[in-house]
Image (cartoon, rainbow over the protein chains, first blue to last red):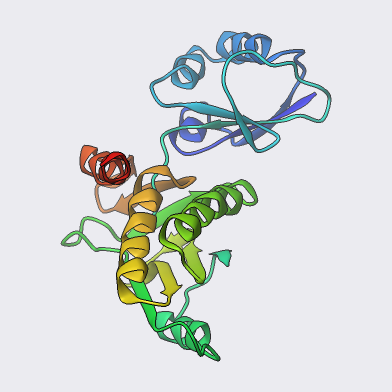
Length: 79
Length: 151
């Protein structure tokens, strides 16, 4: 069970911020989330959306274990 | 020091504490960013952070600034949560032996924070709420530091 976190506009699109999802890999997780909610699936693949696994930015495919924290991060803006 | 706070803070008090007990510094530059009301269009500015990750990412940039400008110290205090217009959102202080490094490092860190720091910003107002993403201007501001490096 990966712990999925959505930030910024992604949590508004989904209607949730945090959820446990059973998934062996990042691509399987994306497919699962998109199947449950096509609008979220599209938003997760949107321009500038990054992924962090256990608070480290990753690109491409990755395996997930039972305790992996997967965060989807839309474009950031502080200050 | 990098700190995230969900409570209002007093930039003057933070600056006084940062200045204390320094005998060889010579220069401290600061920037304070305040939440704007946008002529009534924004009643609350909401900033979402990713605690742990947000501080760690800002810390990496603070380390870059230290190395690049030869800073003696740097402090970044950033609000998260719901912020009223007029309240401080961010406070950056840079300490160096001489003023040029302190000024430039402060400018550099703000350009980074505006377009790269892990925060998600939502403006609430009478017409509803909207997410604010970095402007082209913010990306251009950050890019000018790369140009300066390659000169």
